[in-house]
Length: 366
Ligand code: NAP
Ligand code: FE
Image (cartoon, rainbow, N blue to C red; front, side, top):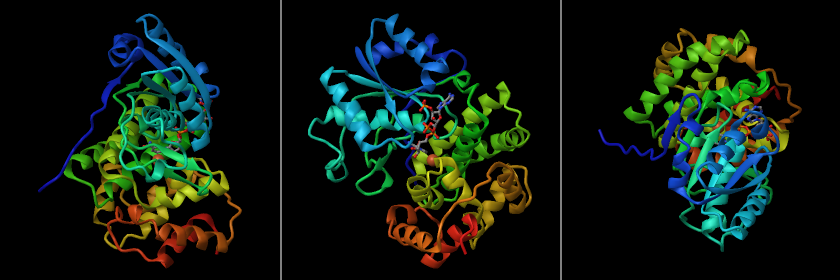
């Protein structure tokens, strides 16, 4: 057996971890650019805690609060200009995956002043200034992954920035998610679940990554029941945050697979939130496997005996009617079939026709 395991992010998980560990920020830098979305960080207490931690430990900071969902390279350039002009020496991403991913990309752009949205994908490996991540959704696991998923309007798609940017430190306090609305809770939870599935059924999976997958599925046994019954209590918030971080650690080792790659056009062209874009494809993706042995193992950890039972859970959480034509599906599928990076993570050969079938059977176009 041979494998590599690397997860360099220091994780603080639990109640009030930001303020309890406020001295950590000063060990990373002396002037931070805080990167957030437009509203939620100021409402859920995360921005308050981080700014208080910085002020009380003598760390200077400024705020860039313009990150939209599925952050664009334009926004990343704008944020990095502010960071460069103000000579910040680290970046703090607070939010869901969008601000955390934007913070990582901004940290690369600040470190490399010649990099811009036109040359980033052909630049080779780049360093970044340090990143701290504070998660306010339980979904992406971005706080513990090296990935930064950005929207390229030039290429009309979402894609990985192609750099390895593990946050130095991740703070996880589920209190920031207490008021996350039901729909965002579901969408983001499904994202975390698809990470577990795609990381588990992955050519890069290792005994170390599977540990996180299997523990994550066990947590989802509890979390699915709570989600279906709409019982989003504090215990649920803690467990789903735990599951999402474990899923992040797992995909940091394996990468994702078909649903993530196939979901990007559904987000870009059909505005489907990221978790739903993957989730809507997941059951048909699972059905497409010829060897179902690892899927059966996964179902056991989830406390289920049949894939049909998982389908019932998905159907009760996801209700999507997309206006999509067969021509569009063929276009997305053909483009995806040339995405060798995602295809090599899938453990079986898959044809263009099968990819088209996964889309068609999932989103209704016949
Ligand atoms: P998001 O796009 O960061 O945020 C979605 C919405 O939730 C926004 O309207 C945001 O408002 C709101 N929100 C965030 N935290 C909240 C809270 N505590 N209470 C109330 N509302 C809150 O959603 P996400 O699903 O977490 O992130 C999706 C992005 O992550 C996608 O771009 C996806 O591709 C990426 N992703 C990255 C990785 C990775 O490894 N890097 C993995 C999977 C997905 P505000 O805008 O006001 O903050
Ligand atoms: Fe994801």
